[in-house]
Length: 181
Image (tube, rainbow, N blue to C red; front, top):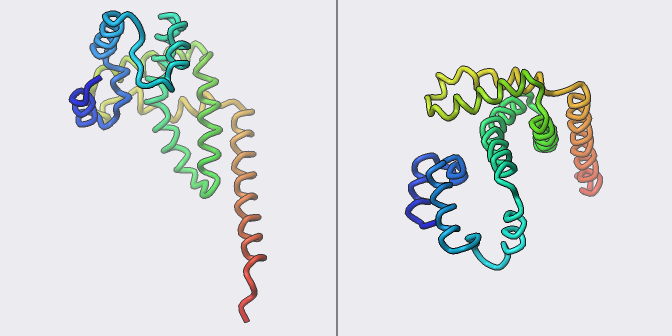
């Protein structure tokens, strides 16, 4: 990939990973790899990764690409939703746990969720302005529905543990500082 394409992509969307959603770019990359007779890689450090990629079936690749597209839409919504909870110092840990659980649910969505997810991808492909994305506006309600009772309990437990850690760290810092007379 050349620097010009990267600069154009960065200017266009502000996110280089959006290239993965560009069918023309994916086809061009596949053509380059076919032309050179193998995988295009950057440095020896990626050799093992590239070898692993070579074993991925086209169907599995399409499924992973779909998951990346869904996560690129849903993770910002999830983050904004969790920020509205005002979790303080426990936010990051709760967000990581929520991401993990969302990823699990995306592996095997219910029929209703699968239909909504397909509509979400279709709407995203239309490249309409955010204010007109009616399916995406349902994201928080759908995320809330995806979370099971166990998920909610795990998020609450994570928040409680992180809050307790923060309080105990303050206590420890206060105990170490000499008393001011």
